[in-house]
Length: 140
Image (cartoon, rainbow, N blue to C red; front, top):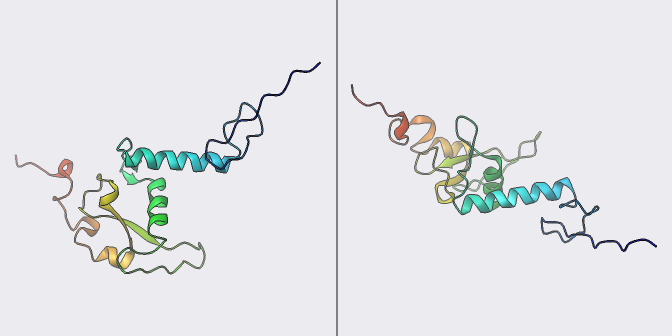
């Protein structure tokens, strides 16, 4: 006589599918990546994540993806949305409104095309010495 099988768990990502094995938590790798993305964005909005990666504090890929979805792959200033013929992506850049690259709050980030981004007052160190207190030099 065999033991009755345990009911399968439901995927944690919210897709509603049953996982293939009892020890699994996700239906597929895609489900796991979607769950990790959703959790990262939730934690970032709650202030538990800084939103940066690497030694130079670049904006994380999850936040870039979130902004692309939020603005529908369009420049938030002019609405430009032409796609690159090889990659199929719209070449957009993340702009920090206040000029502080370490401030990755949602209200401080926007998606701009390279033309609109170059016209901002804090583009490529035009605000040198104003946005980053850790880079300011004190007089000796």
